[in-house]
Image 1 (cartoon, rainbow, N blue to C red):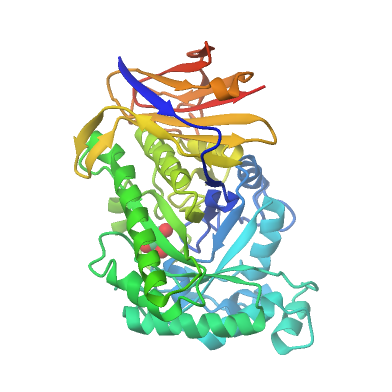
Image 2 (image 1 turned 120 degrees about the vertical axis):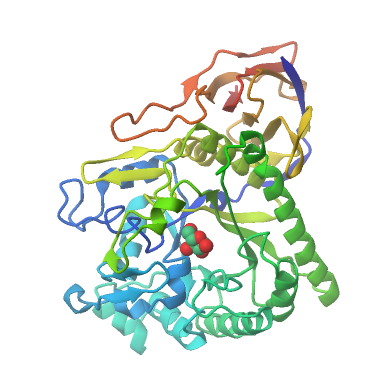
Length: 498
Ligand code: AHR
């Protein structure tokens, strides 16, 4: 059995957790909106057409933030098409995903839905086919109380109070050649700076996210971040990162090592932000918004066969298995281990489209990845302790990968400690120990594990609980030391308190 030691010190806090790192994402894509969160006429929907069963699962996961309306979709979107009387809303071609967009769900529906889901919006503006003028109009529609054309237009659409949306993305993946209106770093940096400045003239209290690279593998990675920030350093508060991993060749150890690549990605972007800060002699720090991250590959082949110009097809409907849940758990640990700089993150996406929640016309169920996401969001609050992990590692395509990913959080008010841990060893259990003498009167509240031995096991509507967390009695505290046994290929949360 492998041995690992976790070292913490009560006085060594890395950072308070910004709850927005447990954000998610709803794009007009596939069945995320239509048939996902919105299905008027369904017996499972409320009077506004919102799926109540889906809302319940989103509240269960305490999703604090939802990015909307895209994604690639936003780069061709006219937000005006989605407001006002539904019978007058145009059906349009969505060139991002080659489908028809009916516009029956738009900004006002999304804001009503956010209230019911207990979440807050992260709104993206179209900097692909549009620009500063439309972003200005949109923020006027959303955030000005009354007395101007767009604020009164909102009121005429039944929303008397301004929405006060405070978090905005300046476009989406503008470095990507697949993006409508994609740009060079120079072009985008200038546009982001101009647009941000004009949006702030309407509402000075907003926070802005500038687009970083679409992934670490983009040929322009690095120089894109530097050039963009050189232009919009004063306007941007956050720089975005996106990443998706997959296991198409069934190389599980490499797949599980993807969190090493994510860690490198974060470190690199932090360095570039701080390099530009130094060059500008600025006192302002740019933080990170990891606003798209997940596993995405299972649906790629099916998506190539889709008919064009249909509505809400089954698109990007990855069915997740145990090993995907392990990696999602590791990615969440990686985000937490960078809580000093990563302040926002969005699991992409939330419903049906590469999502923790799936629906059919007759129900909704939790995919495997729902569990690490939900438990992190519910229990991963408070402050992250600097967590040093002493464990053997293995060779992977990303370099040395530790067999154990772990992070410890403390909530001094609630007097709790929470350990998230993934044992990546496919064969052996692992004994993990941690000196807890500084928490002398803490005991184990629970140890929950996701330890399904079949890495390819999935949940379906017929077998929704095939892969689900179980209580473990493999943790104990003796002589001020926590000792826990983690099963092979398992995700774990160990909660301690008084
Ligand atoms: O989340 C799916 C897509 O992935 C998004 O639309 C885009 O931003 C990214 O490439």
